[in-house]
Amino acid sequence: MSQSVQLAAEPRAASRKKGAKALRKSGRVPAILYGHGSEPRAVSVGGFELERLLERIQAESTIVEVTLGTRALKALIREVQRHPLKPGILHVDFQEIHADEKIRLEIHVHLVGTPEGVRNQGGVLDQVLRTVEIEVLPADIPEHVELDVSALMIGKSLHVSDLAIPKVEILTDPTLTVATVVAPRVEEVAAPVEAVAVEGAVAPEAVAEPEVIKRGKAEEEPAAEE
Image 1 (cartoon, rainbow, N blue to C red):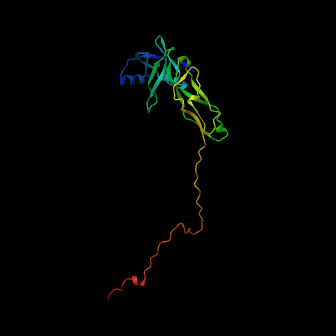
Image 2 (tube, rainbow, N blue to C red; image 1 turned 90 degrees about the vertical axis):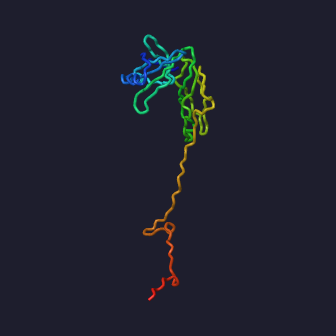
Image 3 (cartoon, rainbow, N blue to C red; image 1 turned 120 degrees about the vertical axis):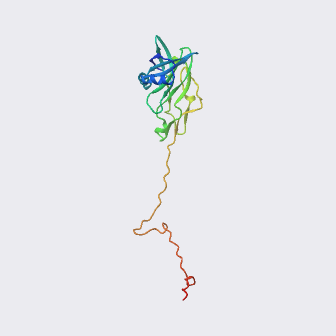
């Protein structure tokens, strides 16, 4: 089951760009809280607290208990916007969830074991798919799903259909490959060209002799007339 964490939020005015910039300067991050047909609520959260939280959770699958005044709302982090060049978070979206309503989210796939094709055949394990989309009740959200790859030989694969998650409906295409073992790539090495080194001499094949054109007597320049 997924872990649950807490994060304090404060109401804020739905301001424009200038207001959001001032909010960030004060150390807070603008956020939006939406869900269940209610109007989206503009809030803010502590930037330092949010950064620390994101360092220790899987944001896609962790329930966040957002405390807003005297209320505590359960939510999922749906989007985190970061500046492309500068450190810091620009904005975060929270989706409110209810215990009796199923939600859609992505969870990570963790590979377990060392494949036979790697251990005994020198193959390479390639994880093609790292997350899958699921539908589940909030109380049954798993932190991740594990897939045992120990029996994989070179050329063999495991697919989404091989995943088993209790109380969860997997929405990702079951035919997609999750992991496969491939043969090691062999680099072709060009054969060395044999060369005979003779001190002070150059191999005849290396340098072509210049063509020498000799003039015959008939081609000699005429003598100057007296």
